[in-house]
Image 1: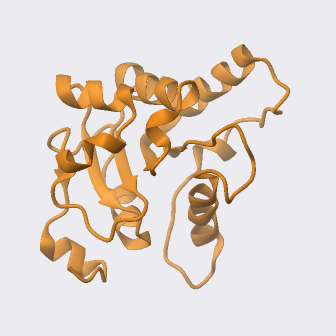
Image 2: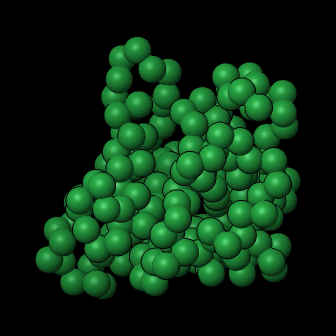
Image 3: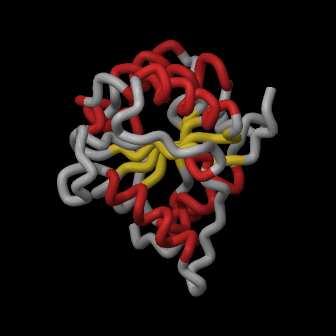
Length: 183
């Protein structure tokens, strides 16, 4: 297997590059945090490690590129927003390949939430591929709000060698507070 040091980021793009019409804005926020000199947020972006593909590339070319990126990843950040569950092509494929083949943990980060203490209550937001793997116990997932310090901690902590303890793992009240999240 490839050298796995990257973080793979999955999000529902909705077939658009318009940042106001999809979750691509959250992916761009992660990149902005990483590039900002005054923000402590470090990760190796798996999408930057493989040659880019164009929107006009064939589906099989895109699929191979995503597989290569996932093979080089130590974990996956799954950005979950109100429309993520409606994605029927790439997000389900990414979840399936990450969990079933690469055996990497999923850091499920929820937009629009300030804290996550009962992830099962958010099941209506889950893509079916994620929901099935939670139900079967085949995924190890950390559920967190889309907050910079929580994401940074989860990325640095969880990988293919250090998995969350269950499909529905979450940070404690004390951890939320240590990230500056008022609960």
